Image (cartoon, rainbow, N blue to C red; front, side, top):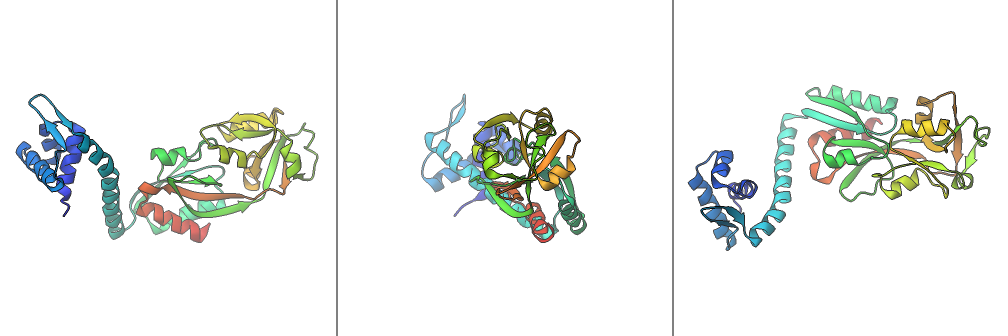
Length: 286
């Protein structure tokens, strides 16, 4: 049998490396900490912690046990918290990141979420063009709405929506500015402004499918400024092009390219009832 209190005790000892401080964190006596540890070690059949009058340290087996135990314990704790949240209803704070332009459908979905879950505060955070997945990985947001493709093994891709035709942003002085449309072959030979790292290579290539290297940028505004200066062209979905319309930039329809699509992503290890709730709303509304 597993005793959760013994596992929690070991985790705290591993962090503090001090039985007195571990007892303070667990609200038990130092002797109780020793008792819980001995019980766990008896259950396993080997020493996990070496304790002398001068220091406390993990044994090699204790170090390995800690590495395996910590993610499993965090998953278990998250499962219990999710069950509690489901029992209470969705509450707390949902931090939702978005990349690109928040269109009317997305605004409607957020409005529906707020109406259906009044006890949950919704925070909207803009995500840099060149870092679509970083905020989710860092825990800065609970979930994010990003441009596809998404091929990250540690992330879950939820509902996809907002499928839009792509356009090519060029300077009004660019030779292609007068064209009615541009094909994939022409784009392949045009310098396209691309996202810089840390955006993964497959994602950067999907949004700048060209054989000619163009400048790399971290934000959408940086890209449009370089476009206006004649430093290259840039692929944008139709809605983003309409939102960022400016007199010194022309948006030419692109032909033969996959449509631009948005999707909701979240971390596999941090899925909560709030995340599942916004995913359901986006699937129904957006």
